[in-house]
Each structure stands twice: as structure tokens, then as C-alpha cells.
Amino acid sequence: MQIRGAVSGQGIKLNVEGVAIVKVGGNADQIRLAAQRFLSQQGDIEPFTQEVLAGALRSIVGGLTVEQIIRDRAAFAQRVADESENSLTGQGLILDTFQIQDVTDDGSYLSDLGRPEAARIRQTAAIAEAAARQAAEQASLKAEEEIAIAQRTLALKQAEIKSETDAAAANAASAGPLAQADRDQAVLAEQEKVAVRQAALTERQLETQVRKPADAERYKVEQEAEARRTSEIAAAEGRKASTIAAAEANAEEARLSGEAEKSRRAALAEAEAIEGARRGEAEKARRVAEAEATRAEGEAQAAATLAIGHAEAEAMDKRAAAFAGYNDAAVLQMVIEVLPQIAKEVAAPIAAIDQLTILSTDGAGALPKQVNDNVVQTLQMLKTSTGLDLGALLHRSVDKAANGVGVTTGKNGDTA
Image (cartoon, rainbow, N blue to C red):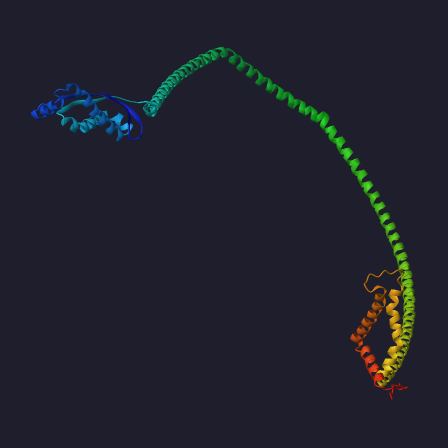
């Protein structure tokens, strides 16, 4: 039997092939049940059994993972048998055996599932193979090393034997020359003794013929040099004494000249000091005289300024007394006298205009109005600064004139 597309617990669709052997039970109840179900339809036993097993297979596959199904097929087959036993027994059938032959899938899950293990096995095999090669190479190297050590030992032994042989041959070859050398050494020793005796003889001849005459000549030269040195020292001492005497004479002369110069400079300095003192006294007297003149001039100016101040103060007092005696009429008389001058000064800026264009609804009448406004502003400024209200004075004078009161101003400001 075979089922396709059975879904595992992981959602993988599997194709399962199995072999089942089914038979009719051996007891009377099972035979009776099988006869009742399949008496005239014995050909339906196989389809019925396949359907029951297929259902059990799909049910068991849905509760297992692919790994569980593959790793323990016997347990999987036993669970299928247990699952289908009740259905088969109810029909008088007995599942004699059931085995899973193959489990496949339509994709690559099963093949991929084995790849990690296969890779691990390949890796293990490769490692084992590399280890075997390494061990073989190490064994080969060890063998080559042992061979090299044996060859070196052999070469050293051969060199040692050759060295001993060469030494023996050299000793044998040098025996004759060594004996000849000993004989030559003895000859040289005798010749050296002869040379020493000849050198002693030559030394004595040199002492007699050369060294003693040379010592005598050297002594003569040294004595002559000592005599010349003594003579030169005496001459130098004489020159030194004469030089010292001349230097002392020059110093004395310079000292005397210095004393005279010092006296001259002292007299000159004293004369200059006296002259300076005299000039200082004269300058001091001049400055005192100038200071006295300046002080006298200042006192005169102060006295003149004081006199002017007293005169101006007295004039101011008199003027104030005169103003105090004035009444409103006198003040008004004085204001009336200066009003034309005020108006003239106020209109002076306008009179200086060469050409004038007036933009006003009043026409040319705006100009006198402007002059009048300037006069009013001037009177207001006078009131603000001095407290004198000319407008009030004019109003009082007009009121008195309207009431028939005559106003006359006397010399002292009296009114009648």
C-alpha cells in the first residue's frame, strides 16, 4: 500500500509505502463478523484494509516530525498497527504484520536533512585522512632524521679516523726536520753568544773613542752658554734699572704737571662759582622786582574792579529804587515805547525774504497774522521768564481809560 501527500507535524508532505498482511480471526466471533461483512464480498477485504491503514498512517504522520518517522520506523509501524486494530477487529480481521518500506517527499527536505550528517561524516573522514597523512609524514621525517643522524655519526667517525691517520703521518714526516731544527737551534745559540761578546767589545770601543770626547765637547758648550746667559741677564738688569728710573722721572713730571693743572682748574671753578652766585643774586633781585610790580598791578586792577563793581551796584540799587517807585502806568509807558522795536525784530526774518509764496485760504492776510502771532508768543515768553504780563497791563489801562480816569506819570512815577 502507498499514501501520498501525508502532512507531518512540521507541515512537510510525505509519501509513505508499507506492506500489511491481514487475515480473518481464528475464533468463532471473528469468523462470524468477517462472514457477515465479507461473505459475498471477499474482494473488498483488501480495499477496506488499505483504507483503514491509510487513515491510520495519515493520522500518525500528522502527529510526528519527519525525523521521528525516519529514525524509528518500527515504533511508527507499531503505532499505525495499534491505531488500526480496533477498526479491523470490528470486521473480524487481524493485522498480522505491518512494515514501513519507504518514506519520500516531493521536495528536497529529506535529502537536505541528511546533508549535515553527510557533511559531518565527510569532515570526520577528511580529518582522519589528514591526521593519517600527518602521522605518515612525521614518521617519514623521523626516519629521515634518524638516517641523517646515523650518517653524521658515520662521517664524524671517519673524520676522526682520518685525523688520527694524518697526525701519525705528519709526525713521521716531521721527525727529520725537527731533528735538523734542534741542530740549527744549537748553532744559533752559539752564534748569539759570539754576537754578545762582539757587542760588549764594540760598546767599550764606543765609550773610549766617541762618548768621552762628546761629553767633553758638551761640557764646553754648556759652560759657554752659561757664560752668555749670565752676561745677557746682567745687561737686561741694567736696562731694567734705567727704564725704571726714566719711568719714575716721567711719573714725577706728570705728577707735577697734574698738580698745576688741578690748581688752575680749581681756581677757574671757584671764579665760575662766584660769577654764578652773583648772577643768581641779580636774577633773584630781578624776579623779586617783577613780582612786586605784578602784585602792585594786580592790586590796582582789583581796586579798579572793586570801584567799578561798587559803582554798578549803586547804579543798580538806584535803578531798582526808581523801578520800585514806578506804577503800572510808568511800566506801560516804557513797554509802549519798546513795542515798535519788538515788532521790528519779530518781523525782521520775514522782511529778509526775497520772494515769498503763501499757501493759505486767508491769502496775503496770513502774513500780518503770522507777525501778530509772533508778537503774542514773544509777550508770552516775556511773561514766563520775567513774570511781567504786558497783556494784563494793557487791559487795565484800557479799562481805566473807559472809566474816565486820567493817568499822568510824574518824574518819580506818581499818578494823579
